[in-house]
Length: 115
Length: 112
Image 1 (cartoon, helix red, strand yellow):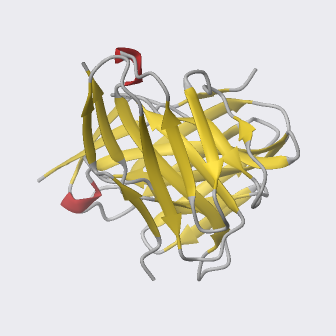
Image 2: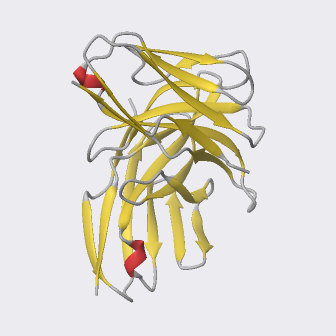
């Protein structure tokens, strides 16, 4: 199992450009999440998808859109990037680990810089 | 609103024991999770407490007191590889779904 994968790993954008961050999981999890992490801070929830076909706003949704393409894939789109969106973006899915805990599994992150 | 507080930094010596505290204010509380994150890496799950008391997983233990809105992560026999950031996160039921709300993290530095 690859777990949660994210592409790209790094990206530099100019203000106003758009891009889509891709996320996929192969653990057959229903719930998926997008977070951003700014330096020295915890993760803040942008959007989440409780199940295929549903998406909902988290704590900091402004400037972002999401698509739950199917059960495996959950993408995050920046329509018009701003310097304030410079951050590390983590995708996660939620499921049962081998010890029986219902936890979130995180991807490796996308480091985005907006100039 | 939702808020969590944990110390920003802790330093300890290899082989010692360290405790990282977390206090929270939240509604819809289900439990308290702990995640570890090495520099440049992704958060990884360490432990979860839904009920009061101590959960032990090897060198790591986690404690919860729901009445005090307080928990801690205890790391024993510290190793250099334990140098990382540790996040407490409350699991809440909100808007018909489970969510995690993260604290700002505690940076642990283990010295030789």
